[in-house]
Length: 112
Image 1: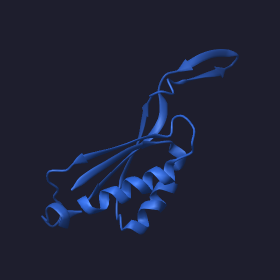
Image 2: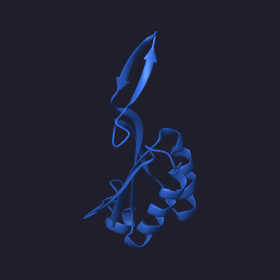
Image 3: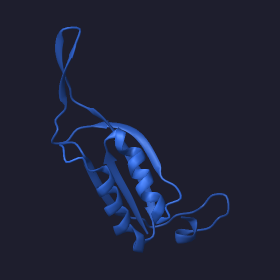
Image 4: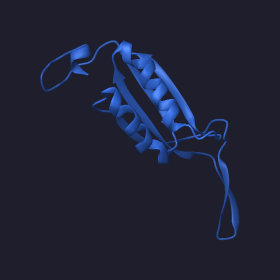
């Protein structure tokens, strides 16, 4: 099993969800987060004063999938979250050691 985590632009969340649904993804977790990378924040003007915003709003998506589905999930996220501009985000894939559905006690792939 794999845990696919992606940091994307907030307005791309629905596009990513729509790209994952045909793959059979039945659920994902999305969290509003803040961060920076090569973008290094941005300069904004508020009431005539210029100031730097170091942490930009992003969305973190986490999806637990079987090993054979992981590559297709990564490709779907990359394709649907891509704008071609700086700050599109990153995708990370982790090995998932164990999973359990609390309600039924199912474990691992059956729990996904």
